[in-house]
Length: 367
Image (cartoon, rainbow, N blue to C red):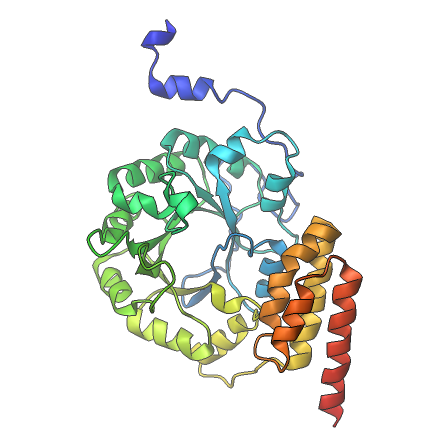
């Protein structure tokens, strides 16, 4: 067949006939890689499930493992660009880190973003073959300008037909359960979440996660739980509610006001992975076990060590700075400490500061 007569689909596929991205071998705790196998936890249910939301630059494996240890039922990777993944050279460090899964992880999804259905399908297939993830999530809600300007993320709320095509081709190219994460709409004139959710429902997706804001709102104002509840009432597919869960009481409120099947926690667990434990206790009517100052300091020290082990000292410490800022939020002298942290480049510097804070916390407990 002459090139001029070949379909766009064939042309795109031929342009991607290169060796797939090579990453570390699948962990023995992950799926077998045999078609039809789903490595989901056998005890995983959607009754009041607590999920860690995907957050760029935040939900790497050190963050995910901390949240699992504190009671998260599910976690998601940072978002992965479909076209970036497909074009990455073998052993690309960026994608190696994005796709790294720790043996302790029990139910981790990979989140894919993009707007080309063919590329999304190819990427879904190759990510599935890694055998590391339990679910395949599609980002249809990221409000970041650089994502939306490429037609990705929440830009898909403006084109439900394309969103459906992406969902359909991703579903055909993976045997993992598929989910989407989206928002109420692009803006007040384009409240199209119902269209995306119904598309997911018709394709037998596992659930839809809905953030209670529009793209135009970004993270301003408050999450609209009533709107999530109205969507839930119109759907048969399970709904995971997301937005403004910063305290155990918020978990009760979002569950009561939306009737959702589960709760997705994002920014609220930064520097506070204990939120998963306390949210569960609140939902079950149990006494709340708040973390101590010593807990916060020691967990920050542990995460800093993991970050260095995982990403190397320079990158690990630079990325750890923001986490330390959240761990010390609300403490006396936090502004001064944060200023010091923002100039740190070594683990020893960060460990010395945290150790000093730890000794002070111990003295307070003994006093």
